[in-house]
Structure formats: structure tokens, C-alpha cells
Picture (cartoon, rainbow, N blue to C red):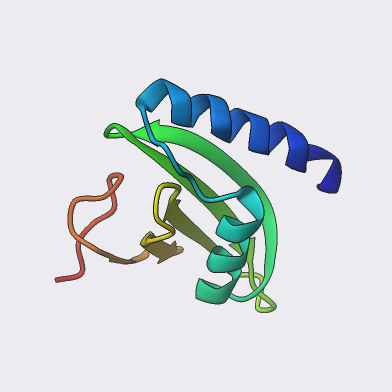
Length: 101
């Protein structure tokens, strides 16, 4: 995974330029935030533009082998949502997650 960090950082920089974001969260900062939200090991990660925002998405396997997806706004580090198999916990209107409230 460490070999991918420069590539992911370069990709983030390019995507940030494309959508006009002056500052963005590094992959390492976003993964630390994701792991603070859902404990475990990152199995998969990606970065994409969703609804005009640069968003990191992490799939984390917990010690109980349950998978959790955590989405992080790359511009400010806000956790946009976290969901476990079949249950959703998120803020309203972000990335197709169902609202919990």
C-alpha cells in the first residue's frame, strides 16, 4: 500500500485541480480519519468526484470480519458517512447514503 501513496497523492492533486479545490486532505490523513471512525484494517480505498466534491471511500474489515464503508470529504476531512452491512449512519444528502435522521 505504501507504494501507492505517491500515485494516490498525485491523483488527488489532479482531481483537486480539475474541480477547483485549492486544498485537499492527503490519503494518509483521510485513512487515519476513516480508521478512527471504524476500527479495523483498510481492505480497499478509492477517490472519486461525487456531486462535485472530491471524496475518499474506504472499506474497512473489523476484527469481527464485518465490513464498514467510510466516506471522507477530501476538501475538509469531514466524515460524510459510515455504513455497515445493511445499516446506515450518515449526514443527510451525501453520496447516496440513506439518512439516519
